[in-house]
Length: 126
Image 1: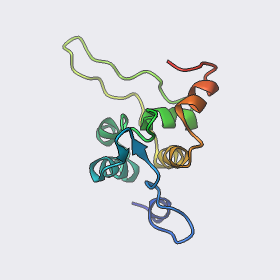
Image 2: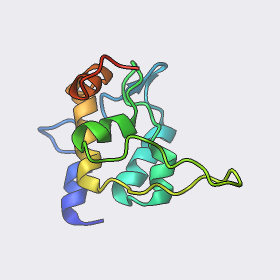
Image 3: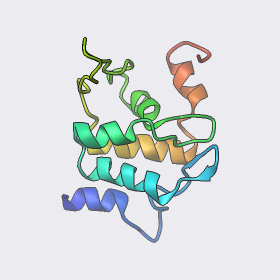
C-alpha cells in the first residue's frame, strides 16, 4: 500500500478514522464488515470488490456500491449478472482506492444517502 493510501485510511488526530460513523440496520459496522471495506480499499480487485460491494454503510440501506455510483456516475449501475450456466460474471470495472475513500467518507458524514443518490438520478428511489 502506498504512503498516500495509508494517510487516507489511518488515524489522524484532527480527523475521524475513515470507517467511523458507518452503520447498518443493526448498529455500527462489525469488525467483519470493516475488514471487507479495508481489504477493498487497500487492494481494489474483483475479488475484494465482490466481497464488499453490498456492505451497508448507512442504516437506511445505502451500500458501498450505491455510494460509489454517487461519487462516480460512470460506474456501472447494473451488476455483472450470470452466464448461461448460472456462474457469476466478473464486474466490468472495480472502483479505485480514491473513489472508494470518497464514497465511504461521504456516507459516514451523511453527505451521501439513498435519498441524495436517487435525487441525483432524477428519481425518488426504488
